[in-house]
Length: 270
Image (cartoon, rainbow, N blue to C red; front, side, top):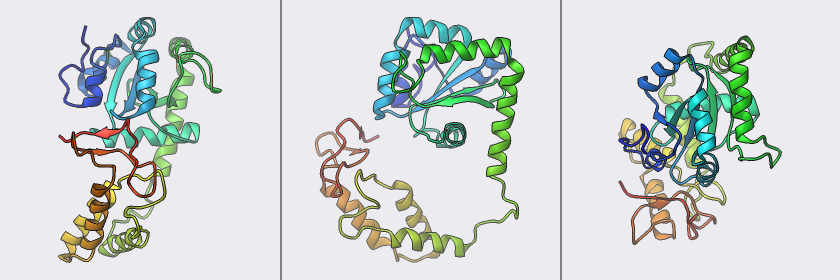
């Protein structure tokens, strides 16, 4: 039986549309239900080509017993980070603040007013890798929500306060053309003219950097970075990153030369 993801467009959300977990997409229906039923929200964020997202889905979200517990005690929300980078960015800050690191699948437990009180990434079905079992996490948090609500809310308030202080702009400064020029200079200065792109293996396509350069050149009515952009895209297209049969690019190359893609991570043409 399908859940509330069945009519979504995201490939990642559709991968979970037939889970026994009663998933909702991010939206007012799920948030209103959490408030009305006074239940915490389990927010799971990932993307279609994420290996450990698939692992956790198979181990836990396809498990009937785990799903039954999730459906009884939580409002369960799935988010595709590629579709909603804004939500991903907000709660990734919370995960890093609480655990010291981040990643996907991202697992965040929220109060109905969207304050995070417990976070993590991948949780195994049984205790291993020095991580608690996902069922134990669910059970412990359901119990805390029922019997120690004040402490849960206190943690949520502390995390929100930390994030607000961290992101506060004391001078209320706005970015100027000089700032954008400096950013463009920094991006161009770290570009790999030998093999294209930025950084070492594993080498990721830096779509945001390319997009920024295009917009910056357009705003300044100059084409000073056009050669860089063309070099980058051509380097990716010539290597094994591009799927000449099915179309689309793999998420990243395992080498510096764009030759060997991560074979489980192709992003299809849309």
